[in-house]
Every structure is written in C-alpha cells, then in structure tokens.
Length: 339
Image (cartoon, rainbow, N blue to C red; front, top):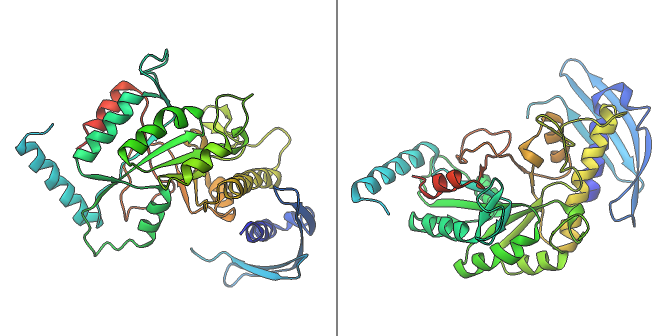
C-alpha cells in the first residue's frame, strides 16, 4: 500500500504540468522506515485534447509499470421524547439513517485540574455524563473504521433507524490513557484516537502516549487509531497550518511532496506500531484545502475530518466529515441535551 501511494503520487506530479518533469523524471524516494527505497521513472506522457486527458506511465525499480488517466470526472417528558423521536425518524427517512454526532475531544482531566472547563478540556465526570446521556437516548458508539464501512454500504432506499455516535480524541495525549480510557472500558464504549505520530513516545514534547499504550488500547477492541498527521500540527497564521500553507522557499511541487510524505509517514508509523489499517485523517485545527485533500487521497486516506460543529448525515456531500468540538462547559451541555 505504501509503494502504491508513492507511485500514484509520482504519476500525479507528472500529470499536472510539463514543469513537473525536470523535477521528477528519475527520482529515488526513501520510505519512512529508511530500510527500503523505490526508483520511479516517468516513461511517457501523452496529452489527448479531445478528451481532456493526460496519460502518464511510470516504472519503478521493481519493474512494474503503472498508468493513470487525469481529467475524467470522478431526563425527557413523554411529549418531548415523542417530538424528538419523530424528528429522528423524519431525518432517517430523508437520508436513510439518522444523523451521526461525531464528538471531538482533546484533554480529559480530573475535576480539580486548573484548566477544567476551559476550551479543549473536559473533566472525567463530563465525559462519563455525556456517554451515559447519549446511551439513554439510544446511541450506539462506533469507531471511524466502522463509520467508513457504513458509508461504503449506504443505501438511501433502505431505512435504518439505528442511532450511531462517535467519540474522537485528538493529538495522542497521555491523559487519554489515564483518564478517558478507564471510563470507556467501564462503559464498554468505542472511541477513535487521532494521533500526531511525531509526538508518540516523545516525553520531551509533552505528556503524550507511548506506542505500547496505544497498542494495548487498540488490542482491547474498543479503540481505533487514525492519523492527525505526522509533524504538521503547527499553526502558521490565521486559518492556516503547515498542511494548508507553503513554507518559505517552497514551490507548489515541494509543498505537495512535503505534505504527501508527512501523511504517508503517519500512516506507516501507526500501521507498523499498532497493526491496524489507517484510513482516516483529522486535519490539524480542522483546516484543509483541495491540494491537501488530493495528497491525502494519494497517501491512501478515505475519510477526512474537520470541526465545523455539525452532525454527519448519510447521503449528504462533504469535502470533510464534520465533528462537534467538546471542550467548553456550554458546548458540553449542548451535546448532552442534544435532541
């Protein structure tokens, strides 16, 4: 899968403009583990104006030839409960399934923590209350990998009123293992970790998880592990991050290469250390652009997540799947009382 992503990336670059060829006619690229490399060579590039297609073929050092075509389109009163359930059924009939709230957490801390009730912070009590309240409302907690399968099997003509919800935790903070994971075990609730892989096993950068802890949680069957990039969780300006902006001295090609390599590195790290299939990427700060989505797709990702505050609806077109940020008291109350 890593090799395939590398080859597709090379073909993508070659198919964009003729200016790509001086940079990429013959290139050795080291894989993230530094134990393997592949030599990729552009063989031919042909334009077909009548169909607005560019056909590019390339060969790697294992003598396989690939080709790509660019240009083709690709507590409730009885009355309140009745009203809520009627709305849910109406929504389910419209989209085939009820909307899915995807909650986004960062820090989970004890109630006496100095930052409790601030943005990005949730107490253990708040997390447990949210889980219990959503269970009372009939929600079934699933992982991102399970959501991807539901999306793949979606059929709007088949009514399914099962209510799903997701708990996602960003960054890979050690407080998840200490404070959130025990609650999830007690409640038998699934969740997904989006980890920034460069920080894992790095006690210098902050209180982050270790790969050993992540592997242990994954093997419980409750925790899914997905990507929050490798080393691009950096804000560079207003509404800009390393994912969405070029560094000083970068051109469009080196920008593409940098973020593609970062995405691929994060996938490789998780799959190598944990063993699960990585198919989802949570954008740092919820920021993305068309180039980042293209590079993430080439790197093998199927789902991308932002934090725009909406619930996910089956059958609705999204560039990135929406999540609801949970970290402030008023937002927590809103989620817990969600109809």
